[in-house]
Length: 360
Length: 276
Image 1 (spheres, rainbow over the protein chains, first blue to last red):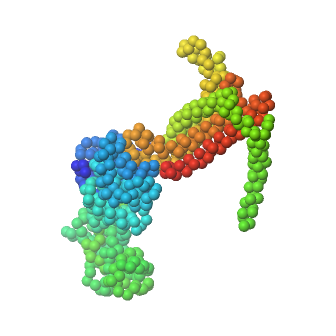
Image 2 (image 1 turned 90 degrees about the vertical axis):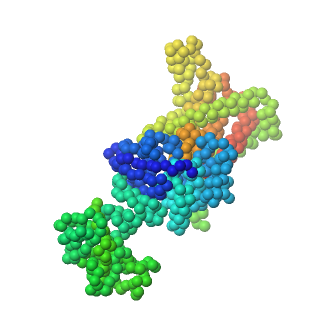
Image 3 (image 1 turned 180 degrees about the vertical axis):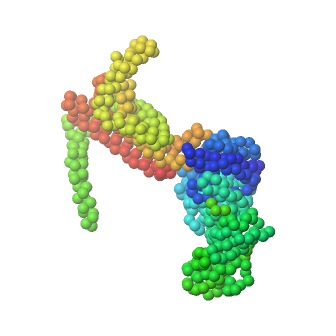
């Protein structure tokens, strides 16, 4: 593989008339990193990938490869590998010719092409299918051909546009593991676009969350999940309860806030609010647990079970409380007997189990 | 069962019409070609022995080949631009393509006469600009016939090509650029092969239509350049050699059926090439 390259975006924008598909996004992608651009449709993630690839001309900002601006280069001069949504294999060429394509257009000698195509076919374990046409392959096989084709010419980095969206659920899970292993094996920088939060969390080194063309938060999957900066991020990655309240008291490492008639304690490294300010606190369902009434836990709340569903590994409860309906996930092994709708339950959570987020 | 019967009932009028006004006369034509002036294949032997008939067939073939080639090149360019135009521009261009189809072929042939004759617009303009001294012979020859025919055939070439090009997945072209192919390489290695079934289909369609063309060659050929349809007309109406006329007509029909068969095979090619 070619020497690893460093890519950064500097205030990248794309306006269509007055609509901003991408609004001043800046970020750096480290060498060899698996970075995922995650967001709902219309968030600008695909526009961003297409701008990096060269199919979309930015209306502002720069794209830098090892410090050199490349935003004016056409796609064929960037030497980036790309796996398209739906793979975009050449329907009139065999698997081997598809993979040979980027080498042929570079004028590489035939013998070298044959050798590299053979290597690439081996890498994705498709040697036996070299002479098939794309339409004779399964989705997973097409996916691997697209990968081999995007990697065979030693690109600076690999761009992937929702490559798993066309596959069924089971295959998608297998391919996630395969892609991640593949990333480790080739050691190339991957920029991966998806709207699937599970994919983003399970595969990425870092995830960039986009919304309305803006970069909301960039971090490792656990940073984003454990410490979401905004309500949107907390909701987009997994499920979350939100407690809206007013700060009653602050201390060195946290604050006490009032939520209706209840008082809760919130500890954490985030910025301390002043007394009297409105705060929003995100609380993951799995961080809440049923406790004995009168427990010594710092945050306690009584409620009534309104709904529950059995998920195999866990029960998912909806509990009506004085601060509204809360979602609670309890591991099956800890719950014992199945919950009863309408029965009383006491919920508790540690002061550092929740996190203050920005309303957005 | 009832469904099937009503289906037959529904298509019966059409079947009857085609049978009575198309297949019956066609069978008559075939019959005459082997019965007149005497039973046997004598008329068909003329294909190999008669110099005038061979000359007409050769002229027809030559004009058809030229017409088809020129039409394909021009239609390809138009279809390409059409495919890549914005929706509004596309609608306007489509109107421009279809408008001539709604005009009488006779009107169009005479329009070309006023343009192409010795004192016509084209010659006068060229002489006025000093480009030429003597008017060019632009009609009453194969050039004139070919010009008129290309004009008529263009929509027939453009529409199938446009349909084929519209089916080409834009992502495949983007993939080609992303994999390092220049715009030219992308066209030659991806777009052109994927549009090839459309080229073959459009080519055969135009060629088949050209073979039987009558009015345009009759007017722009001026009796000097004679194509097969006009020759048949002369045999039936003037020389009254019905045997010869029907023989050539039958040969033409057989040729067209053979080409149609080839065309139907090429529709399969679309899937073979994966263009579908």
